[in-house]
Figure 1 (tube, rainbow, N blue to C red):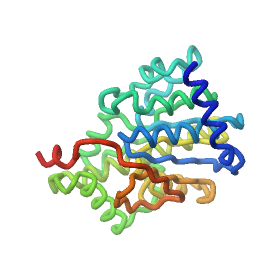
Figure 2 (spheres, one colour):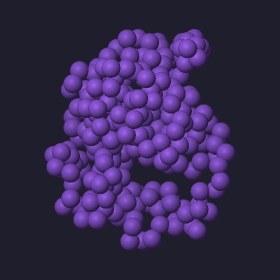
Figure 3 (cartoon, rainbow, N blue to C red):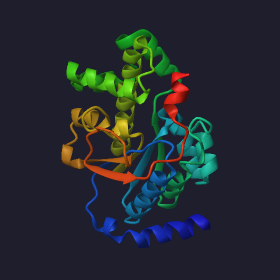
Length: 266
C-alpha cells in the first residue's frame, strides 16, 4: 500500500513528463549506490507507465539468462522480492534494496521485467580468452557495430578512471572487452523485447552503459534503430567529471560513501 501512495504522489508531481512524446528506447543511467537517483528514476518510470503503452523494463542488475524464470514468476505474482529471486539479482553486490523503487514502479505500472546482463561465467571466459570468446548470441550484433581505435582508447581510459587508476595495466583491456560485451548483451535484450511486442523498452543501467558514443546506443544503431528513437539520460552527481555523451543530464547530490579509491588502492 505504501508504494501505491508513493507512486500516486510521483505521478501528480511530474505531470509534464506524461505529456512528452516518449522514445521507443529510453536509457536511464545511474551511479549505482545513489538512492536519490533511483528514487527520481522510479518516479519518472511510474509517470511514463501511466499511459498504458506496452513496456518492458530491462535491468542491468539481472542476467538475461534468467528471463524465462522472471516471466514465469511475473505471471504467478508481481511481488518484488520473488521477482529478484527469480531474476538472480545479487542482493549483496547491488546493495539491495537500493533498486527496489524501480522494480516496484515497473510492477505497479504493468511493465514486463527483464534481466539484461551476461552471466558472470560468460564474462570471465571473455576476459580470459579475448575476442575469440564472444558469446555466439552476440556475434552478429558485434560484427555490425564499428569499433575504432579511438573508441578503444576512450573505453580503456573510462575503465582506468572508474578504478581510480589502480587497475593493473594487464587488466584494462580485458575489463574494456567485458564492458563492450555487457553493452552488446543489454542492447540485444532491448531489441529482443521490442521484437516480442513491447512498444517501448526502458533500460536501467550504469551511466557508462547509456553513453551514446561507447555504450548501448551504438549497438542499437548498428542494428538499425534510428538515433531519434533512442533517449539516453545520464544521472550524475554534482561535482562529477563524467564526460559521457547523453541526450539529457540529471544532476543530484553525491551519495554519502567512503572514498572508493581508498579501497581500490589498498
